Image (cartoon, rainbow, N blue to C red):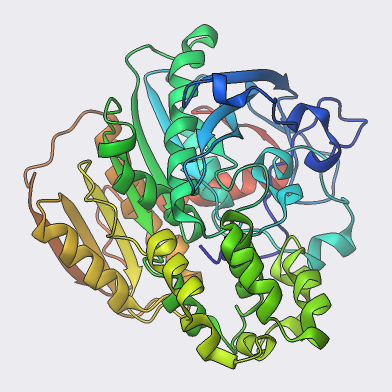
Length: 452
């Protein structure tokens, strides 16, 4: 969840025309939910469009980064209260692709501002492309991972899983939208070349793992017809309530504004409670920071703050009946079921965003209920480094699942304590793939198995 950033938010930006900037979702009529959204089935396409295949370079130089094609779909999903709503997903097709492999890759966009959603942030010139902007905003360390997946030839779909209004940290919304984004791609993708029998798997780190983790937990009840090859979850945040306490007063405090505001958008009773319980003198400041796209936009004044100082009763406010019920039902993993698909989970024991024990407890709960999990506990890493150091094994594990290789521990769990990461002959080259992916994004390339 609370994503890891290096320089500026997400390296890939797409636009209909290179000479024009993308239109913000709040100003783009394509994003308007139709009045008859309830007439659509979950995962059914409402509308679609193809946008430019050009991706934004990491550096502010005139180089071209591209994939073969980019397609966007509005589809019907279900919000946290069970209401029919619309959401958006973006499908990236690399050059020389393997249409039999599809990766559901959920980014950690970590904001309650819908104008910062991936379907917009991925578009060329969606942000000001200046050196000043490059260093004042931030880019997730996950960017080379996306490029590495595309360079393997995998089709990649990434959703605005928070919905049209930015319901950040709302687990039910995020999980359902993730599942429905796959449904729409499986229905519409074959029209543009996706194999009808394509294997598919999920991957997400931090905020992306929140969406994928909830999708895995909800899949047996919400989308039982979907048969995932597996899901890789890194930097997991099983408890948003626990995460708030963990980040409070530290460098990630800025994300607390987004998380609380996202839940308020998802639950009307929480909206009313929040408005009544914010300190009146600090209310405007809270909402201003909650409306930023990234932690860097909130600025250094938002970091190392006591988020509970914004509430009339301090930290005890969060334990009152309304917020407590929302946190328990809407953000606590392990409450709504047990994943049936195989999971690869990696987490730093000393993660500074979410306590390692939270993930230990969740894995134990899943394993007691028959889950299939390989769990790596990094003894030396932390949240920011683990996105890279844990990814090599994640990509290798996903590659095996998408290739149809069977696991020999179905219905049981494997837990390992590792030091940074365990690298073997199969995983060491993947770091080279990630470095190549980063260079592709920075210096220009046609992304695909034969990119240069």
